[in-house]
Length: 148
Image (cartoon, rainbow, N blue to C red):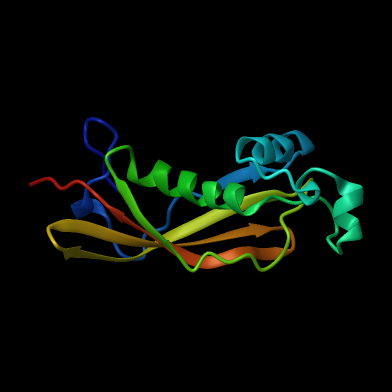
């Protein structure tokens, strides 16, 4: 993968099957509280262990917006500031992302194509912790700048 002078990824340099650098997100109590506050999701399951356990969860856990933000950050670090995220598809939580775990987001380029004068890529993503895949697989479609 090559980047231009502004650390932006060109569409021509992307290869199908190419893996993105993984990004790790340690889930501390502080981080979960800040995420819940930042996206105004004050449900106690996201910041109170005792309450989360009464609902059947093993521990307090990350909310949907925070988990989607992890995917966005992983893709953004790959595509650079000039890339445009067009859609999120297939995002689904399959198990809890609990406090004390580290969520690792991995991805790879599933396909690339041209459509309506845009140069697009689809990146398949998933989130994992020590228990296995917790979110996904799903994908993000992004438009990239070109060298021409």
